[in-house]
Image (cartoon, rainbow, N blue to C red; front, top):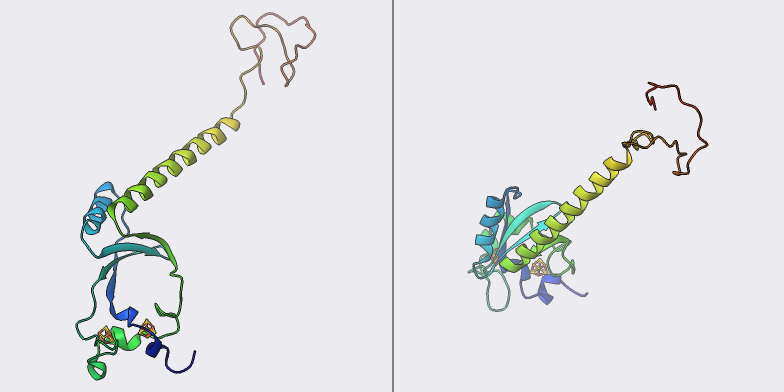
Length: 166
Ligand code: SF4
Ligand code: SF4
């Protein structure tokens, strides 16, 4: 693209502010995020595991021609911001999650809860596989010895009082 990239842009990076927030852990934390999201022009996103709140609010010094009205004294954040990975240049945002309404957060929590239940079930099944099957002779009244496939073994005389030691 010819010339300065910003000349082709409508000042996308000057239309919002985004601040890092604590990663929510408790139901109360998520309810606080819900509170953010019930407000207009507020969204929350997760990028590289970090949570941010985003306010869509244009800078008061953004001029109608999309140039900075205080370029010489613009804040540090603006000075450090470059076109390398800016909003206009980078195209797709690297967000893992983006919530722009409370319903998006509700859906996220439902999915998280379902995945958590599945993971717990898988762990329970895994733990079950590690347990030894009960001794074939342990079932009440079942003196029939079986192989590992459950096929009855030939009956052999078993000395009385002998305990299963498997
Ligand atoms: S830095 Fe990027 S997003 Fe910001 S005005 Fe320039 S081209 Fe647009
Ligand atoms: S001060 Fe200038 S560069 Fe910074 S957000 Fe406002 S218009 Fe954009």
